[in-house]
Length: 368
Image (cartoon, rainbow, N blue to C red; front, side, top):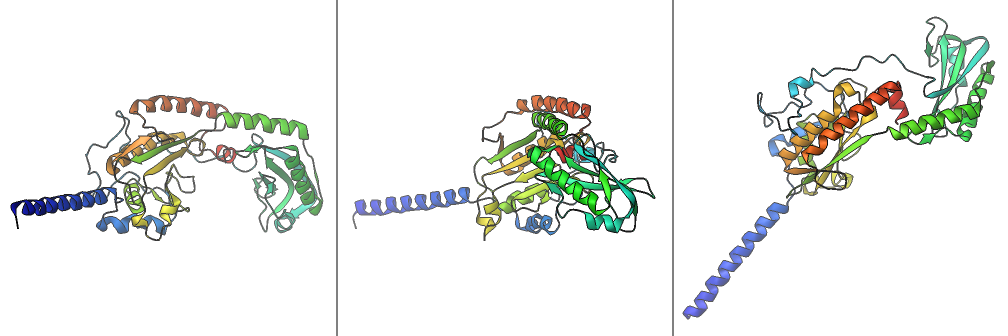
């Protein structure tokens, strides 16, 4: 074998090694990041229960999370410390519930004699909607003198039938108002009572005005977190989100950060490709971006949801090597957050002035 042939063999071997090494590096780089094995079980725990109340671990971390006293990543100093989060003001208990003239059409219904709760329930319409609007009937409990949904064993003589003026589907229209009248009249006939309906044109006009206000002040913020290099597996996303207090939602590919009080809508929502979440082998599925969302009207301003959104985005970006973007995937500089925060405060003030404070029962009904 000549020296020339030997040189060719050596050069070919070197090239082959380089190609194999490059392919291995490329494969490793493009393989979705997976949850670490010793935390894999933790990442799946949220799937056992759906959207429980915040138990104080919202931004607390596990063994691999930030230690006590460590500096949390944040946007320009706007951070929410895990211990401070427990001291955030909690919204006062709701005092307004049921039908309310602010967002409902209400028709009084007076019975000729006392009606049992069982009879009233039997006379209820089969559906609780008039078109796309919620419909409800309440009775004035003779014992407690409180308006309530009729209860078995109680006595009533006055009722009221209501239909919501507007929601995110739109304003109450004439057809929906007519369906409301038919349902309420059928109930009144069944309990031998007389209804007193308001003027349709006046109520439809109120509905349009309320719908216009709601449309002008309905804010839902969404930010995209996009992978800089390697994609993420669903388990990797769940693991990092769980460290911030997110738990599995009812829909595949959806995680939520629960509110401070049980029974309230979630503070934040994290979503990613549902098909990747339902894949036969989720750990091999590639997720290149996730969405962090906040429904302004559904969360009380006292919980500082936007600050929590910023903090969650910062921590996830750092932990998962991601970049914060708008909904279209355009990277967002940190300086854009302060104007958004200022606009939100003005929005909160406007809703407060209309007695539709963010997170209140009425706001949650109207913006739904």
